[in-house]
Length: 408
Ligand SMILES: [Zn+2]
Ligand SMILES: [Zn+2]
Image 1 (cartoon, helix red, strand yellow):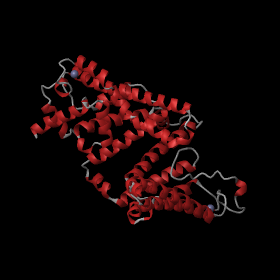
Image 2: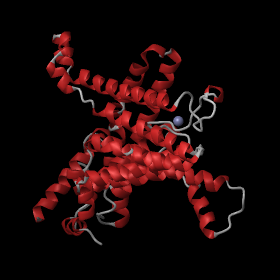
Image 3: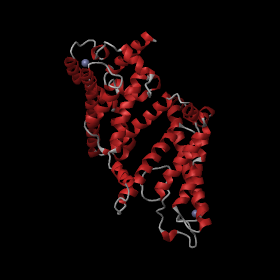
Image 4: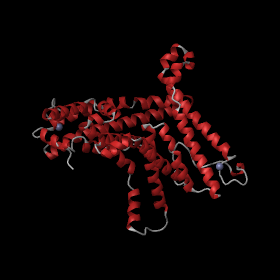
């Protein structure tokens, strides 16, 4: 299907060039390119200042000189990478226009942004992961907000559907972790590392101590973590009030700023999961991976107490990532030769640099949304684009909006 915005774009850009869209002040593409390669560097360094400042503040006690040097070098590297990616993307806008001889809908932002990331210098694994997942989450948010499909619109509003899907994500994640094939961070860790000697004799469970102790311990710990996190947030929000009067921490205004729901969600999540595993283990007289699947599914129910976008996307991306790793490890580690075309294709697919592909396509898509659907474009991405290009993309976006408004 050809979108209406593409048809309108093709109409308004007939006879217009990359100079009209990107650089009215520069007659030649070359001079414009020299100009921005020389001027946009500080933008990327500005964008990552929080990344430079925050981690040492969090670590505070164990900050060493060596850590500071390595951390600063990493900041410089990621800023330089981003600068090169941004400049390459901007150059690609002119190059693609000159190759095609006209402004093309997909060659404004989508392909240039994708190419900028693809040709640009590679990021270290940790940063690549962070960037790919952040971009992917933002793309998903934009795609859902942009969609006019009634099913998606209904899904966005329905708490029941959100809870049911979150339960499914939770089940996938905990099954992958319980199998021992995937090792990653999640809200709870289903694998017990307690020494077997601590285990009560005659118990089918692998945890130390009695079942009720194990359950109460988890619920208390996770409930406290939730309360401490929320209290920390309330302190930040009400810092002005507390600075004037520290005793206000016991007052009504501060208490109303504290939200206990995160603590409740975490306590119920771990409680249901642990109780489910113990009950199923006792009923079957042994522990199985499938019990984690059932208990993990049920543990997702408390999501309806605290339905937030952050927890939902964390569940979704973790389920995809872990499910992918699980399937990959299972097929790649199989010693048997591939028996069918399906299996060998699957193995080939798992050899692809997935993070890099996700990063590239998400970045291209976000660039596209930025230019043509600014009302659904994530605020953080818009800011990042404007800062890194020293407002060159912002001016371009405004020109497109003006052109489109002329024919609407
Ligand atoms: Zn140009
Ligand atoms: Zn137990």
